[in-house]
Picture 1: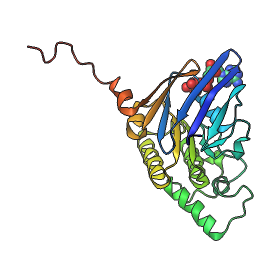
Picture 2: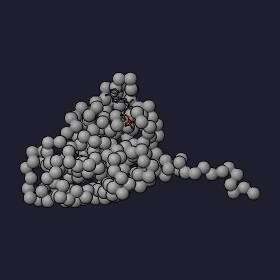
Picture 3: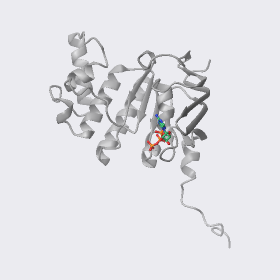
Picture 4: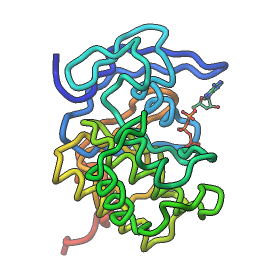
Length: 235
Ligand SMILES: Nc1ncnc2c1ncn2[C@@H]1O[C@H](COP(=O)(O)OP(=O)(O)OP(=O)(O)O)[C@@H](O)[C@H]1O
């Protein structure tokens, strides 16, 4: 079985929407999921994460079949658009859950939590409750937890859509740093062509519940380049 993520003839119906995914997402690569609203991008991510189960077909992640496994058993970390944090737990605890669900932490673990908070520019936020943070701060805390989980696959469902341009750049840099350090497989939904240009290696374009194209970044971006006049260069 190939590494990375394989959706082998995966089919699912949700209400009036049908999904058929058959694809291989390469290991150790940053893949962007693009496509219009309602195309099925989040559903694709939910199938990989285990929040949706296929009605037929099989899913393999990092060489192991995961079709029927619980989300918590899958070798993935997920950061969603929102609702990533437990509202009744402070930020330190929310982030520390990435290391130990039972919260048995050594002093070294506590240092790792503080360090992850610093990496997302939330040093000193540990005692705050999620309700007192801005949308962007909450997303950065969720990303800090994903950093600590340190799983081979990182799934991102537009987690930084609410951040301003500078913070988006910072978060892109963080994803790239993490990717360089760990050679993880990153799958991220994004509508932002500049973000694709900055960090993606491949682009899967989802249309009507299927993968319409699977291409390298250069090919994807060349389709959006300024059109060249057919007469240019002629005498
Ligand atoms: N639980 C559900 N029951 C019924 N229909 C659903 C369900 N979940 C998703 N859908 C439908 O499936 C289609 C794809 O939804 P999905 O959220 O995957 O799209 P998306 O590409 O992520 O869209 P967006 O960019 O707007 O977030 C939509 O038409 C949506 O209404």
